[in-house]
Image 1 (cartoon, rainbow over the protein chains, first blue to last red):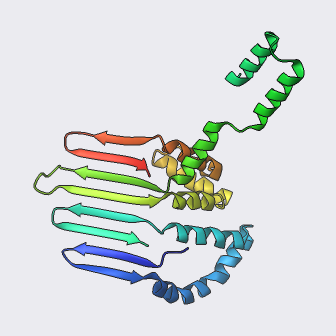
Image 2: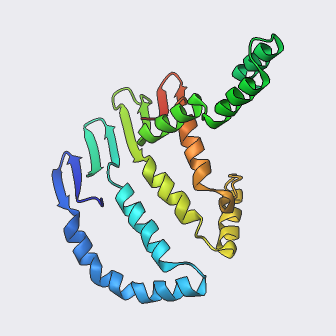
Image 3: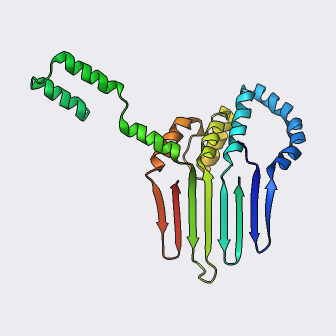
Length: 82
Length: 140
């Protein structure tokens, strides 16, 4: 399953829960523009486009669970993909 | 030669079992996968994340901590993607890696090799300690 939320906490500062579905929707038109070019590139490089889409989907799904936590003195940055 | 196989041959030499019984036992041994390999694969399947933690006290008034957790599935998918890189582009990537001092041929990276690596990471934990810094890399 692809990630659905990203949690970003920056201290001192703010905390955000970003619904990634909205970002996917925003990126969808761009994807539609890029896909014919990608398809041509796949044909030119003899790559199965379905295989490529499958791998990109796998990479996107694999981001779930990623966590980056950096703390230095009073500053704290926390990013988590759920 | 495996210990079990040697034991069967010893029993045959001592006349405790007959030749056909020994043959049957050896065949049964060949059909049974080794327990360690099964345990290793199960352990590799259980590992989910690569974890890197860094604690730095270079500045005692401002200690720094970094904690990064990367899903191993991301590495697996990355290796699959590397397999799709055309030969011409792979040469450029290899050259760029060599310039950075990394002697890796990405065209030879295979998902099976990564599984083997992950299996071995189960037993591996890298700890780098000095007076002020501590780095730890492990799988969980």
